[in-house]
Structures are given as C-alpha cells and as structure tokens.
Image (spheres, rainbow, N blue to C red):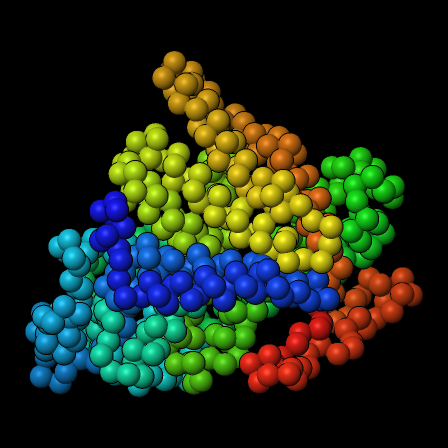
Length: 496
C-alpha cells in the first residue's frame, strides 16, 4: 500500500465509511417534490462526503486546525511573553506532551505558520465576554492590550469548549479565523493581530471591512433589498420563457437572441439567488442574534462578502473568475483534495506546471461531482455526467489554455508591449467567450432540474403590479412522516 495512505490511516476510517454509506444511500433513494430540496439532497450529501474527507482523511482533524480565540490577560502578567508562559501546560497536546496554546505539534515537525486573515474571538474558557452596548450605537470597542490577548487555540480538553470548537470547524466552510482560512476574506483587526503570534504575516486585504454592527447591518440590508428586487424581476422574466420551466432549449422564446439571453438570465438568476441567501448570514446571525446570543461568533469581522471584486476577472481572466470573483464556499475542500492527489499521492510540487494542473483539475472534478449528484437527485429529465459534471470538468481546460497563451506571450516578449488596459480587456473577452461556449451546458442542466420553478420571495412586486398576484408562498412546507419503523419516521420537506 502507498505510504501516503498508510500515514493517513486512523481510527476515523470506520466513521468515514459510515458517512459514505449513509450519504450514498440518500443520493440513491431519497427524492423530494420540492425542486430546491430535491436538488439539495444530492448536493448536500455529496458535500458531506467531500467535507468529511477533507477534515479526517486529507488532513488530521485533531492536529491540523487551530482557531483564534480570546484569552483573558492574567492580572499578574504585564507582557505578551508572560501571557504565553501562563498559558503553557494548560492545553494538553494530543501525543501526550504539552503545548503553549499557540502552536500545535505536527507529526512531521512544526505545523506551517498559519495565514492570518479573518478575525474572531472566542474565550478560552468558553464563557463569552459580551460586547459593550456601545457596539449597537455604532462604536465597536477595541479591547485593551492590558485586558486580553488572542491566541491560536488547538483542540481543547474541556468538553463544552471542545464541542464549540468542533462544531465551528465542521460548519465554517471558509475557515474564518482558522488556520486554513482561504483568500478573499479579511485579516483580524489591529487589536487582535497585535497580541497574536506570527504578527508579521502580511494580510492580503485591508483589515476590518465592517468596523461596526451598524455599518454591517446597513450595508447588507441595502444589498439584500436591491438583490431581492432584482431576483423578483428575474423570476418574472423567467416565467415568460418555457425554457426556464424545464421544457427544453427547443421551445420558442419571447426574448431576442434566445440562446444568449437564456444564458445571461441563468447566470444572473444563479448569482442573485445565492447572494440573497448569503446576505442573510450577517443580517440574522451578527445583527439580529448578535453577541448577546451568539457571543464572539457574532463578531463583525467574521462576515466578509461571499463574492469577490470584478477586478479579479480583469486581472486574471478565467482563473480570477473562479478563484477570486465567484464564491469560495467550497474552495478549501477542493484544494485539499487537489493537494492530497497532487502532493501526497503524486508528489508533484505546487509550483510546477504538472502539479498546478493536477490540483486545479482535481478541484473542478470535485465540483463537477457535487453538482452532478445534485442533478441526479432532481426530478427533472437531467443528464448529470454530460451536463453538470462536463461543465466543471471543462473549466480547467480554459484556465490552462489562457495561462499557456499568457506564458507564450511573456516568453516572446510580447506581453510587456501590450498596454494594461488591453490585457484587462483581453481577459474579459476570454471569459465571455469561454462562458458563451461552455455556459449552455450547465444552463440547460439547471433548467432541466426545474430549479428555476422555486419561489425565491413570498411577495412579488412585479407580478403584483402586472395583476398576477402579490403573495406566492403557501401550502404545506414540512410535516412529520410516520413510517412502519421508528427509524423510518421523520420530517418531510415539501416546500420550495
């Protein structure tokens, strides 16, 4: 057996096998009349397998993860160095030795220094220190260095603290305030970085985008209202075209340039639907529940935007489209799978062309598998392999091709002669051309699943004005099903 497999074998493999069994069984046997639930059965169960593999197969969930947490400064301590000394011995290392609470032992030596980006605060003893009421008046207090410090916390020993740690790790897909935090998020604010170890790690983006809860609330509420109006308009437009009702691309369309118009509407509908959901996180968790209920998990710096700037596309083309602008919710799992195959299995360097190609390809293959499973569990006449999977499998081809052209122009000395504005224009045109060529593959699959039949909003302004009705939510959404055995009983989701 290959050494990389022997090194990764641990007692969690039976648990992982059970996760695969339950998830695959659900994908094969479970369906729902609700289009969103039916699509979600495949997507979420496939994601459960990939995310579980990321945490317990591709990585060691007990050793490889640390989280930024807040520690109260002992009264007798007068410096960060003394704090570190006081913390020593309080957290037991998993191999029986002790750790200083800031570094975690790794089987191969020291764990690589984490990339500091997002900010967080969780009290080391799991007793949240509630924010001052000044927070809600628009002034977020900055903790004094004389009162508290922030540390990299490994897997804790105390039961409730460990439970919070694990739940946060499992549900925090973007790794905000964790050592595996990805790009596109924000570094901790200055008062957190000042007392963290490794403060010299440069942030990739300006710190603290949302300095107050008021700013976080108003910014996201405005975006949510605008997004909801746009989504309502898109819903009304798609109801005019039988293509979006799952009747196929050969149906007549009321729009000019039908193929391109349908593709644009599909992209806009996908983007606004996801954004509308993503905006609920800061509005509900941080601004409604807030620190009085969620404690430090409601800190403003934990809610950066899900989508990146459009400049990612103009600067990097297709690579920027997927690696910078589009949401990075699943990115860490895709990268972990790519590293497991390219790094551990094939031992290819990240910086080499073959190593980079393998990692990118594996990541998109994983994405294709997730969406193919979603198409498989949808009720429409779908084609999971030549639809969803093919679309994502084609993306690395475009990225590698554009990269090859860029390298060629650079080697020949042509790239420097091209003005920056022309290079940016070329990147945008390359993205538009590639999306026009490959976009219909995924757009047709989305339409076939019936996903656009869902009602995104309870109240429709545009349909109300047109005399088609204002209220569009109703009926039975969920009920309790009683089976012939107790394990066959449970909630049945009917809405959506």
